Length: 421
Image 1 (cartoon, rainbow, N blue to C red):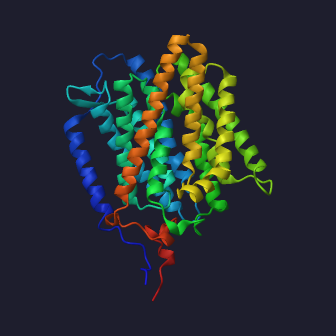
Image 2 (cartoon, rainbow, N blue to C red; image 1 turned 45 degrees about the horizontal axis):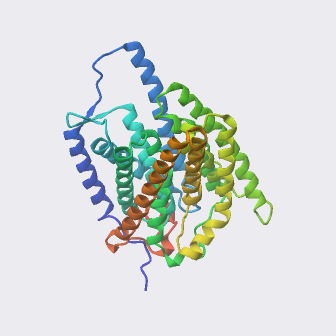
């Protein structure tokens, strides 16, 4: 007879967490310092701090509140959705600070890693990539597996940035904004390797209701409001920063309208699906983030948002189920349609805009460079996602049974449900 309860993680999660935090503390002790500026100009430093901290705080809200609330959409997975999001983000940010410091250029100062507002924002963007990947396996993995997955994903994403910046001299902002494509494909490959027969065609607990839908909508609103800061946080040129902010806002505005329209149009009952709207409304921000350095006109940003929401909504309605039936790949949050497809759309938009504006010789060179960047990013995410899935498949990590997927009771205490003898 199968065990009644999910396997206890008492001998796994505390051990892994204590070990990782001990290693991080030692690494921070030996290598990490607070950045100290040699020349101090109180007025300029104060203005720089205010603007940098505002961007950091906006990104911070997105990572912990935006993604956290959005992950509560499942009926019986609210504790785990928000709690595991916080756990992963906190761990991923620490690891990203170290990985960025060790690998990426212009971060080493006499064998020391100097923390600044910019480095913290970069670390949070790396954590965002890990949270995107988590969406593909949402509800089907335990916190130990998620922690290990986040560490490998951040490592792979930073290594991918190092390759792009070192070998191809890619712009740092461009390389880091591929986080949506990398994270989504990484997560989808992990989900494919960890496929469970017990969730076909639809798991009995994989559903939402009014309360969880409203909570998840709060997450969408937080992400939607602060996405202009998310895209522009690392842009230093003031003129370009304003262009990015305006373009992102317009793209997001069009995405909301299109997401609701397409959701109603493709419904057999002619009604909107809240889960579709919650995610597809953000697709414009994803797409414009990749193409933002080449988008100079408002109508271009709006067109990108229009196409991104259209593709994302259609993918949510049709592609998710077909992927499960055809490829046995269950993508819980449909990150492929919310992040990967809009991200690749933004890649195409950047390519076409640069080809239209550059001379023929320069355009060809950029096209070759641009294609190589995407191929390397896709290959890295697919290979590392597959390897991570095989690693997480080991029984030593004590995965929960199929019937305990999408269920908080596998990991959290519920005193009100305790049986009194």
